Length: 175
Length: 350
Image (tube, rainbow over all chains, first blue to last red; front, side, top):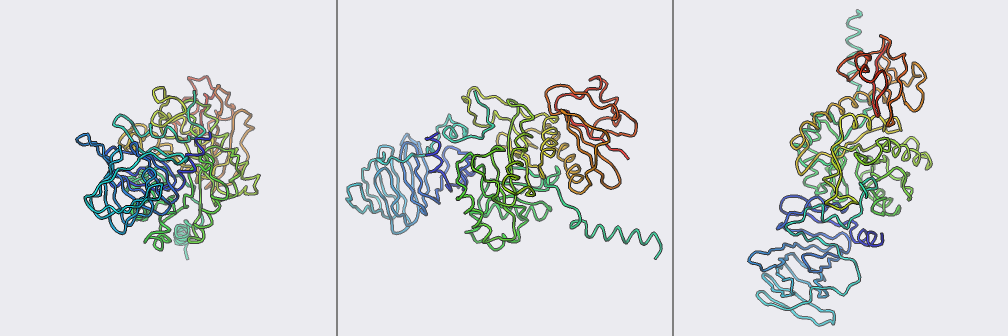
């Protein structure tokens, strides 16, 4: 029950849409479908804690970011893009940008800026500016005690599997 | 003016003002996604559709199609309110803004729901609001929020079928308790197979089947008998496709129920409630109406056992509706004049 409450409190007013195929999660948190390989457009109406293919991402209220996981050539990269990020966190590293930026981060924390530039700040307040083509190692796990909603999907999972941690209607079949 | 002209003139006036004179019983379909879905719903007999899609662009398309097809929408307001469509949305054929889906299930506070309602009404004061609760009795008394209350409960195959009507009754009691006894109450009838949805059971051990026509019919009537003033059916899609493609036989049967309930709803909304022609003893339930000079009695058996039908209904003046035969004796021959579990009978007489 506590887990459900925690998940719910993070999930309220989540606005996430897929630019390809079906809507994944609507503004009220109902997962419709989550096809593997699609781009996830995250628009956070509230502070949002997401676990995406093993990477913990914090999207502050009002921020937007597009995410796409690719395991092509076994690189297991998350491709991120957006415009004027403000303290979006991957793990404990805060990312900001002045304009349109795209970067890739591996599940191991290898971050590379593909377009634009990123201002990164770690949890010890160390700041660095990464311009296009530059790389940096970050920690993809988070020290936050908040509950992260998993939005990852393996090829064998169906959308129903994603609802594993969601609350269900009272009339749903039980054991 | 001669009498023929008078009749024509009266009929014309009646037709002209019929939309204002006759209340329309809401019969809606949940979960539409495309313009095609809107058209299919209209063809099936629905006069309202709900969509979970909150994208303003999609809602705009749905609204255009709904307008063309004279069908109403129930959609989320939140994103529209901050979009370029916020002004034109005032002219959308919205039956009600869909504030929240099962706030009781998601532990949404009453304050949060009230805030949603307030913000929506601020922008669209003329448009009604609604939300659905996941069971009839909610620990948080949401009953005095929004213009319309919806209640869903999906019992097939694992719960007693009558539990649906019981939850509608509980929702009605909640409304009465909060001083909102005249508020509209829409009941959401199951039109899906639970095997397609997450359960409290393990995924590999899911149970479920699509409701039979008789079950959909019973639940529809039982909802009305327990106070529902409108009906919705969840849901438009099965396994990723519209029901008309994925389950055409089930869709065709469901459509028959929809069209029946459309007429029954018209009778209930616009007819005069009258006494049953004979006492209908529990556990059977019966309601009678007079509409357009004709009397109607609807009887349901809300139990899992056979019940005896009063012999009066075997008299020739009672025609049975919505059956293969209008003669009750033909229909009841195999059951020795007993009403089967969850059976519905609709009679017409003068």
